[in-house]
Length: 523
Image 1 (cartoon, rainbow, N blue to C red):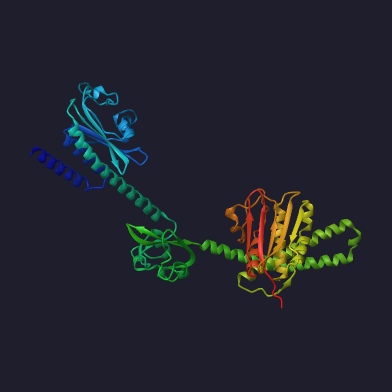
Image 2 (cartoon, one colour):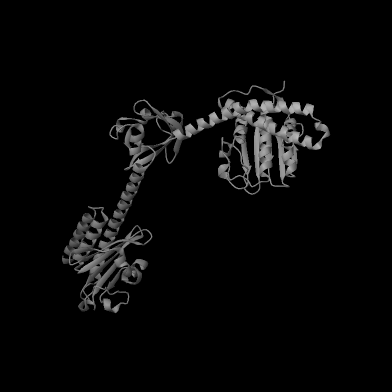
C-alpha cells in the first residue's frame, strides 16, 4: 500500500512537472523552472544548468541557490565543461551520483566556496537529452555527503528526461523567433518593394519600400491585390498562380502601377512561401528604370553612330577609289600596302555600321528580306579573305573542314557573311601567335551547322550566355577590347533565319562557336 501510494505520488509529481514545463517556451523561464523543480523535489541546496547547442557548445546557463535564481554567463561555467564533472557527463552522456565529492577527482571546487564548504558534499549530474541529442547538463548539490541515493537519482533522471524536451522545444522556439526576426529585418530593410499575399494575390503585408515606391500608405496596401498593382504575366504564373509551387521562383519583366496613374518598369520575382505556417505568395519587385534608361541611351547611341558614320564613310570610300585611279598604286608596293590597309579598314567599318543597322531592324521584328540559296563554301572563302591580314600577321594555321556536296543555305548572303566574318575576327583576336583556327560545316538534318574554333584562353561557363548580349564584353588582361556588338548581331542574324547559335568551351583550350542555318528548299 505504501509502495502504491509512493508510485501514485511520483506519477502525480512528474505529471505536474511536465505540465508546468509545457506552459512556457521562453528559454530563461524554462531554465529557471527546471532548476527550481529539480532542487525542490530531490531536497538539494543548489543546482546549475548549462544549455548546449547542436554543436554541443554552451549557449546559456543559470544557478539556483536557496531558491534564488542566479543568472550566470556561459563563461562563468565553462570551467565545469572543460575539466569538471559536467564536462565528463556531457562527453559520456551518462548520469553520475557522487555520495562524496571530495573522493572524486572529476569534481571541481568553486572559487566562491567558503572554507567550511570545500569538503565533502553530495552531488548528482545528468545529461539532458532530446531525440538522442544532448541539449544540456544538470548538476544538483547538497552540502552534506551521502544525502543522495538511487531513489533520488531515478527521480532526477525522469525529471531530466522531461526537462530535455522542454529545453529542446525552447531552443526550437528561440531559433524560430530569431529566424522570424532576421527575416523581418531583411524584409523591412530591403531596397526592393516586397509584398506577401494570399494564394489569390490579396496583399497581406508589405515593407516600407513597397509603400515608398507605390505611393500607398502601408495601411492602404492590404486593400490591393497584385493584379491591381502590376501587370501580371499569367502565362508565367498560371491562371490562378498555380505555377508558384515548391521552391520555384518565377521571374518576368512588368510594370508597377504607382498611385496616381504612373508606371514603373520592374523585374518581378514571385514564389510560394510559408508565413506562420500558412501558405502565401512572396513578390519582390525590382526597379529597373535605370537599366531601361541605359538601354534607351545605348539605342540612341547606336542610331547616332550609324547615321553619323555612314555618310563620311561613303565619302572616304569614294575618295579612295578616286585616289586609286589617279595614283600608280599597282606599280608602288608601299603605296599599295597603304591602300590595302585603308580599304580593309573601311570595309570593317562598313560591316560594323551594317551590323548596327541590322540589329535595330531585327530587334524591331523586321523579317529577312533578301533570302536566296547561298553556297556555304563561298561565304567561308569571302569571310576568310576579309580577315586574311590579321591571320597572316599572327601566323595562324587555318584548318578548313567543310563537308563535300553541302546543299545551299536559305539566307541573306551579306548578313550571314558578316556573321562568319565576326566569328573569325573574334577567333583571330583570341588566338595567340602561331595558333590554329578551324572552320567546319556539315549537314545536320534540315540544317547546315557551321563552326569556328580558336585556340585561345576559352570562355568561362557562366559567361557563355551573356556574351551574346549587346555591349557585353569579357574582362581580363588577355581579352581584346571592343564595343560588344559583334556576337549580339550574330545571334540576332542567326535566330532571325530560324537557326540557333551557341558556344562550346573548355577554359584554357579554346572556344568553339557553332550556328545552324536552314537548307534551301529545291524544286
